[in-house]
Length: 188
Image (cartoon, rainbow, N blue to C red; front, side, top):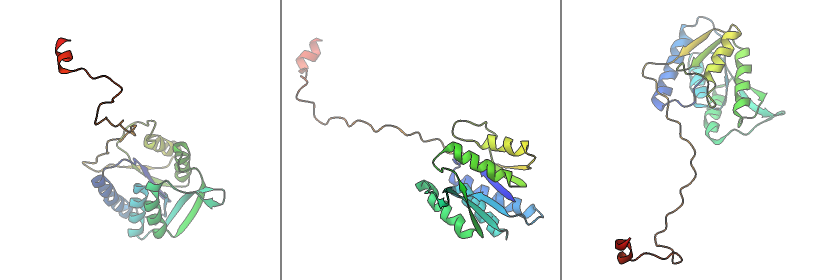
């Protein structure tokens, strides 16, 4: 089996370039290995499309709570629907899709089942959000060959931090706070 993991914050043009590179890499491989992917990300959808276009079987892992599929975060639902439609087989794997650590553990399980990893990775170290470097090291430590996929001119999008909503500014001064008159302001 072949799997793909990588940065989730790819710019749209980069995602398209990565998908093209997936096509090229899968065509170069002589073996008819099955594609295995954890459903729910734009990257998994790109890999699923490339696997399908190469004529390979696609197996998708979805999160489960017990024997029941778990609800995915809203942003992951569209890509998950797409890979499910392309898949010949869907398997459930117990993990919480809202937990970063659980998703990393699920990716480790995925890598453990594979004979090759396509890693969409810019070479940056692991940080608190992105575990791509960790997953590459995990695969290499287990003897899984890793092909780094980072197209020329690839770009990651800037991180958008959640900010607290701005407090609205008053259109009119509060009647409870005395205003200085222009004469008071000049004399101060």
